[in-house]
Length: 211
Image 1 (cartoon, rainbow, N blue to C red):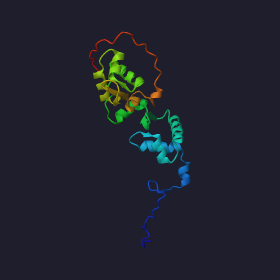
Image 2: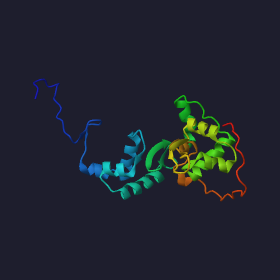
Image 3: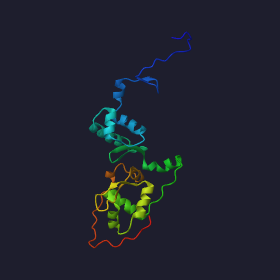
Image 4: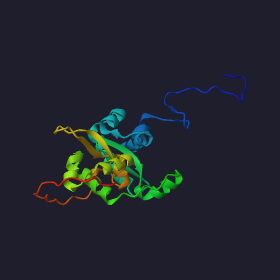
């Protein structure tokens, strides 16, 4: 102890939270609901996290994590953030209704409007992913190369590999940015697609189309 009454040497305790100076006990940590602990991890994570990683960090089972994530999703509905699931990964995103406010805050340019052709191709990919360009072309009857380039540039789709078919064409799928753009929490929230009857006649010669 120092002889100076105005000075002191802090005693370090591994159980102390130095951000607040409050002593934390195991009981305090246990009192925090699992969904709240998950919210904290997703808040600080720069990338989506899957259930296996979350369960390993928190020391609970995958089933407990998935149940708590669903509780979290329901709890934050109507607030300014959303729980988004893309493939196996989970992340917190801003609510789509707040997009204009976020764009003003971050000085972002307004999202470019998608053409009818782009929406067409995007719908095919979203419902049939992963899908190749030849398959998209066969449905639309026109060459979709430029439209795919536009969607790739906007970050709404991505290349996910190659098909095992002739020529091994590239496979395309939607991204988490696609979910954010359309205000979806997961692909399961897309409206059901009515069955489309394909024409029997062969596909005509494909012509390039502007994206």
